[in-house]
Image 1 (cartoon, one colour):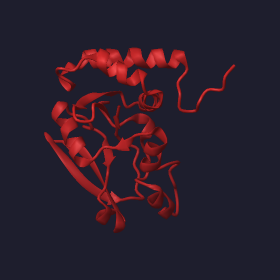
Image 2 (tube, one colour; image 1 turned 135 degrees about the vertical axis):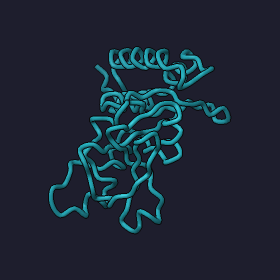
Image 3 (cartoon, helix red, strand yellow; image 1 turned 60 degrees about the vertical axis):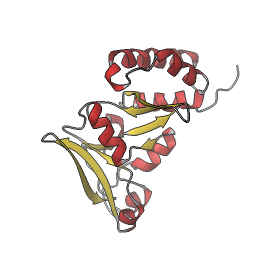
Image 4 (cartoon, helix red, strand yellow; image 1 turned 45 degrees about the vertical axis):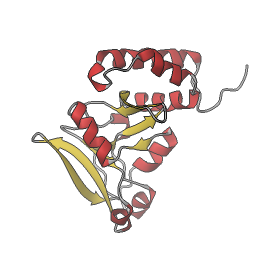
Length: 189
């Protein structure tokens, strides 16, 4: 039996994921008007590593779905669309430097390294706001977002949530972590 690449799904995993993604796509057409599933699946079939990343998003509770199409690059854009920040990615510091700065009660991981290991990127503030235009998320939780270097150099990191009918962008020390804070990811396929 051939050894499977770490970042490649078994045929059974692939089929199960594609069924879930197709159902989510068809049930949420407001996220991707005028796009067709067959074209999206064609891109996914051509890139097993991206499919692996989407599976990582799925198994950590992100409920990834197509939220856009970059016509110039010919890429479909997936974001985590779960109502609350993904359960399998909560209670993490912002990055490794933040994690290493903690003296006590260190969490198991950090958002930036988890995202890199999954082959995805944290949402930017603009991407987070665009997701909120499609539907409201993080009404009880919050999500780390990519933080500008000048803020990070001073020890801070940014996170967002949706409260009182508005998107809020806040700051915290990059070493902080909370049970209701995780991160949302973006993937281009």
